[in-house]
Image (cartoon, rainbow, N blue to C red):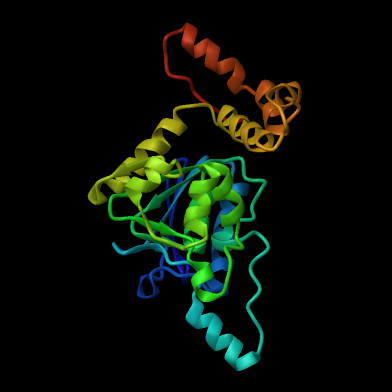
Length: 263
């Protein structure tokens, strides 16, 4: 357990909890650096295949930047804190992570907290969750990928309606807009997130990583034809050469569960 986060492992699954409930799990530079280390370990550890990130307590997933800390630091030093190279929450600027990450949003996801969720592959939200990019209300802008990701995930006019006003969007509306994968009763949140993780873990991790890498790298390719011509993505090539690509069809033919190796 770190100073600002809790990390649990359950087989191939890593569960990360942002642990600053006294400030609605807002992150200051030290918390961000700790989370960078956590996700560095997830990235590097071949025994870990899926991660879930959530927030401590019942009120907040993450309220974003710890603005009080930032204001006090600026008052004392005249300097603004510099964000970590791999992004807010250790995730928002991490573009080389092929392993899937699930956000279990248990309450407020504001600013950088919403940006952490948007950087994940699946967002499972409590029916008490709310989402916003309220930075313009405090003279800032969503600089940890929120402006770029939300505008790609939902219709542009809907995204602009959220971003130009900073308005709060409840979980059900987030689901209807398309950035939330599933909304569940608050008490069922972690169970639902773990069910998604289990369903992913039932698949070959080589296939899962290939799928994520190809999808993410194809998003900005101008046409489907061009995107399909280039399947020389490293994770896709690794999948085609893996033991798993032999094991999967063999297990199917033998009517048994595959024994995935992840190599």
